[in-house]
Image 1 (cartoon, rainbow, N blue to C red):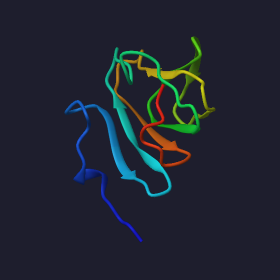
Image 2 (image 1 turned 60 degrees about the vertical axis):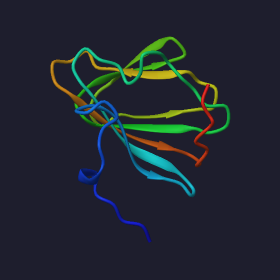
Image 3 (image 1 turned 60 degrees about the horizontal axis):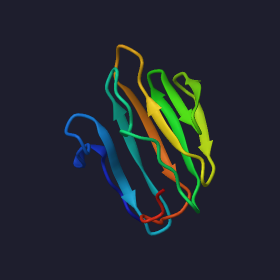
Image 4 (image 1 turned 180 degrees about the horizontal axis):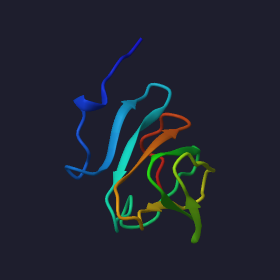
Length: 111
């Protein structure tokens, strides 16, 4: 068994960004906090082999998949397939928080 607490980890960009809670041996997962007017990343990215699931747990966002935009209200879930280029944008006036789960532990699988 492995047990962690979100409070024991830092967001990549200080008060926001990606925060991995578990890395391997079988999956990667964590949370993303995106401030108003911001994106998850500067540009879209994808994976050659793994899928990635996103759960919008706090706030309403925009899921960007292969240059298309999808409304992502709180409670939405998106399964992103291998090779689909994706990003998340926050057009709201409040921070959003998203859980992500990568379907396998392959830290170098990024395009």
